[in-house]
Image (cartoon, rainbow over all chains, first blue to last red; front, side):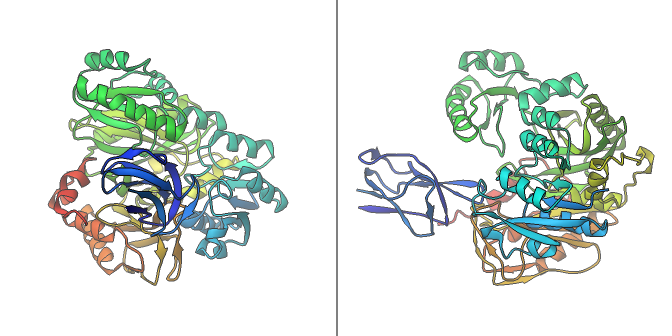
Length: 70
Length: 452
């Protein structure tokens, strides 16, 4: 099981996958927006999306868990 | 003349406009978001009012609230700065309907120049050379292939409503074009709500050189020379200078006169910038027109001795433009470096709290600042926290002064791009003026080890 964490403070701009979806390493899971820049947060390994912990437009802090992949 | 101006912006540009208001004896009104309540520009203004939450649609894009404050505080004009509402034709129109002067051009011109396809059409008619391409959106992939064959590869695929490099990609053959088309269209649709795509010839070894113009809409227009802004990362400018080391007098005059002719043809009023791509043989092609004050306007002010904000205010107040072309001087060389709160290697943003700030002082140094020694840099807005502007009698002197100033410039608590700026200034290629738009890719990125 792997937690996908926010690499910086910002808002959730887009959620690119949904729960139950199979993802591959490097695939974008969530796209954050910080300082007018969109920052994709990718899966670090292949797996299945167990849970998405945030909603679009939520504000997140650095280190917050965005999704869980297993 | 206006008695009271509301500045519908934040950061360094709000501070910049307030400064000119003070020098002209005009009362300034700042508006700010909750995230900016301690920002320096709010205390510089004569009055400051809260707009709302930190998000831009609650604050700096909140037209109703901005108009309400302007009305209640009896402002007779609004300066939009750059970004936010500065190129929003609806907003300009709304201000004027409320009897508040919008310091900028007519709403109709703003709208037309904001649409790339429309702008190309108008500027072609006004006599500006265009990059060979199609002046209307593509019907689809099949047409893209046909047109690309006709124009000749390499070509640039671009989103009509695009900006900041989004929805834009260079392709070298039909296979690459087919691969790139859907993805870029999808992104353009997602980002801008408009998936119109067009294509044009890719200009090789291009330089980004823009002409600053001023026009009063009553037939008087002048050009204030050029700015070269080729040093970019993520299609955003990082280092700008005036004059360009690449242009000769003949090309400079040709570009300036073409720009003036074009703004007269479209009935433009106020300050504006026509951006050109210039190829290795000094052919120049219209890129886009920015209908507002530019971030990099200080380098033009440094070599001309003019205050562009003051001229904008005078034109908007109906005082016209009394400057004649032969009165505009060009003296020395100016360079601006944009200080961004970002990782100098990955270019990812680095919000956080500033714990120490040391600004270099000395001959020819000018600061434009959004922060102070205890500011928080929030994730809500653009990462630019300051601009460092230097002037020298020659380009070499300006480069030397910029290098010394960057070495002495200290920002602690957050990451900044200062190490990158210093490195770029030290390159032989920069000193020799080999400043093409791929400069950072070509010279900087490969020297950087990937971060973990």
